[in-house]
Length: 229
Ligand SMILES: [Zn+2]
Ligand SMILES: [Zn+2]
Image (tube, rainbow, N blue to C red; front, side, top):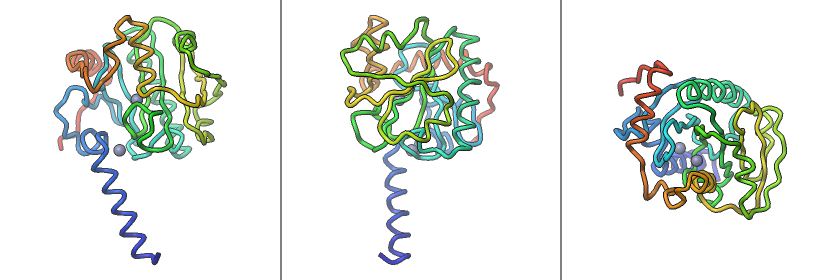
């Protein structure tokens, strides 16, 4: 393929990817979404912090990469460094309002697989949770083997789909590469723990009122002035 043809193909693929991605279209694209579930609470050089659709726990926030990659492991070293300090900072702010939190990412490397949570754009979940989540996950009938991740930067070496978790009151995370997990796996685990197993699916239950409450509580914690688009 000559250079010009590959340029056109590459651009076409990028546009196609953009039109299919809710985060690129609705949240990152000048913040056009009017849903409280997409409200931007904070913006750094490479990431944004938002509330989220289907958050059945108040205080649930996401850190989303500005660049369209499918997992945080595909970010550059400097982007991961920024992500690492941002996640600690967001956690502190959320915890001041809502108490202890757990952090997780469904790291799917290929778009459209069951492994992710239905969004093929890198994002990390920060969820208020009063208990240790690892024993709760280990209760699931799955073969999950955890390895400690000394620093978030080490995530860049992952070349298989992964589940990344930082437990309550921990600074560093653990990672595993389970063969197969159901889609929205962590939502299922959290909803089951909270005795609302049928409400895990964000396609069915948007929980917009909880996202609005999260925005009202955290807007001041982040002191963020939205860009007028
Ligand atoms: Zn995207
Ligand atoms: Zn997710």
